Length: 239
Image (cartoon, rainbow, N blue to C red; front, side, top):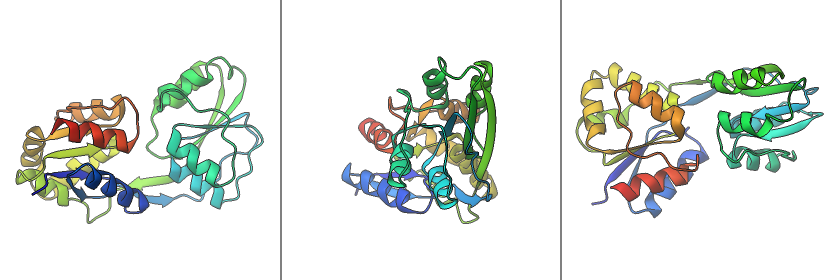
């Protein structure tokens, strides 16, 4: 019987794609969506010199709102860039490191005195906005959507508590926090953490790893690339 690896992507084609990746790697996926999107109705500013998009969801919501930016478009990573390009936008800048820190480094020579629009969720890292402000940019942030925990989330916490998980793939700090919240709601937080200690835990990026560590979850692998397939491969290779 194949070993089970949990993941926490939103319940849409991202979850389906993640499950297919894990199956192709020879493990049994356990999809337990820890994030649901609640659009705010906000539209990114169009008059900025640089517009920064940090997720595929943000790109799709901006497109649905008819967003027509005047300046350069910056995508945090390849998935966001692909969503923007699929919607007909030209992506002008893509950092070498797919993270908030990577964006700050990408723009550090160009944004002093420039207007920078950051369009993202309500859980965006202050590393991005603080870093751009420190570079002398005039930063405006638009919250395009809120990320909430679906009430039904938590199947993976029970599996972890029962020792049934071989691995877990955390794709953001919020998925870690929501996992523990769901475990607490079910009265199995301590047991779920113990179950993860016996599994291979992967995290996308240092912020996610740091959050997990601070909350008592030991992270075994952090892939070099902040993409789900790289995360899944890193976890499965350690099983």
